[in-house]
Length: 470
Figure 1 (cartoon, rainbow, N blue to C red):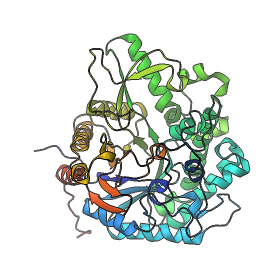
Figure 2 (figure 1 turned 90 degrees about the horizontal axis):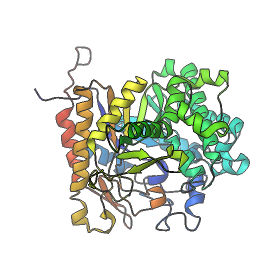
Figure 3 (figure 1 turned 90 degrees about the vertical axis):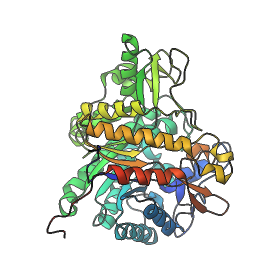
Figure 4 (figure 1 turned 30 degrees about the horizontal axis):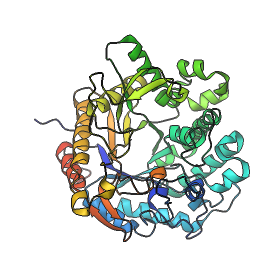
């Protein structure tokens, strides 16, 4: 009998509010740091912004129709904080029109038997909070305001939403926003990113404590965080220095968020290298942070080979490469330079996360941007064989991890439902299984959408109704 994923396996697509919604100044929505950043000259490769994006604030019914067409059983999306609280703060006015928009959207998902997975923060901090006190740099204020925002969402949507994700990729929030400066709010330096990361972990933890104390019982949901990491493979498999470099690289990419949340402390390698620039948790904070996730949310796209050396302490002073010692490339190259196809690395990462943290794993993003897809005619774009190759390999890696390795993988969310505003890349990079003509907003499914629908229909075990259900 063919290997199958369990009957309750969750699969679908993922998106983020700023990347798809548009309507940036409609119905009371306030500006976010991404509105400000993308309008600043020179920040986005193609000079674009998310003012319109895929116009999903208006075309959300089309998006749900696509989800149904693609055969999913779940959808992961994020809420725009500044659409609910335009200025963002706990004493600021709530925008009931924004509340009603997401309520209607969630109700329609549920009506169509699509389970909502809601991300509370996918990088779009209200600009008002950044202006008034520095946003994520201000520990006391941001924890209170984020927790207040989270409570608003739990209160208004928790009867329908049973799966909450507090933050998407705090590594990107902190490093790309406050060290490299390539993401909003565009700060550069070697100190702020460690502070911001610390405050994000605390904000996550206090929101989780609130949910568990006040909402989890009556609403019956679960809550966790999504962390991002590639798999890091030693450049030379059996060379001790490469093995050590790979582990240190994982500690700096994944462990510096996962270890506090699941174990209660930062990795020793991170503490040793960063020293007093790395903030410390108080004893009381450790009690709140440790164990503050009901699952392990994982965004992952690629594998990189690792060897010792380099000056970038954010990477743990290791070097990443796709080039093997024999000069060959690891896999098929994507549009973006940081991504190549390598399914065995995905399986290795799933095993590592499960063995290290012993939490059920929810794959919340995984996908591929086909090289030069933004320049090809539509009749070629829809036949996206490189993306299909990617999904075939990575979906089967999940199957192997579950059925052969015993890893508790509970979900797979492909990135993304739609081509969209791809942050600093603008609209040049396309990750969608649905082609979007940005001049008309017409959506056209690609072959990869049909591939995933067929693959999951064939690889999720049938669910048998009990007498009470029938």
